[in-house]
Length: 217
Image (cartoon, rainbow, N blue to C red; front, top):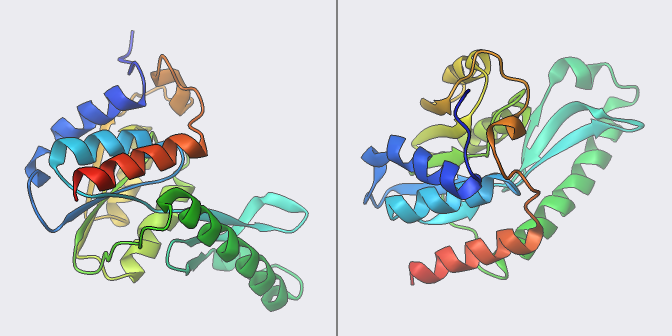
């Protein structure tokens, strides 16, 4: 029987043990991918004594075939394109710009909702620990890592409780350090490694971020 986590909070506590070398440093920031990555990231930030924030990523889907992504947009308006898919679009520039502007608005809406009026933290020159509740294909995390790189962070650490071995290995090309607590050989889905994998809602994300912000003031 492979190891499972009781819930995202327990997964975060176990992940924090593997990130212990970053505890107490004033150049570290923990960034959770909403929504499911935030409860994991909250525990990591709490145990490392680091600030917590969200890093919102939205897929840029081909109109009418939204599951097919031609790129992604992330916090701070940073866009990452999949050039092969983008080039294949008819009237590609118009489509890319229209979808991008719509998703930028959604990123900003979510950031305002989650932060509740608090300013976004500066990430330039810092060690950013990027956290989700698990990796499957890794597409969202990949977009987040590339977008963070463009924002001038000093070091990117991708950290997840669970992911397939090959996906975790692939991230060594995207990040400065990759921490996958569990890398099961017969990985099928992230949820199979959690007893409670119920959906995280927006209110939970807001509450955790507010609680983390209060601890640091």
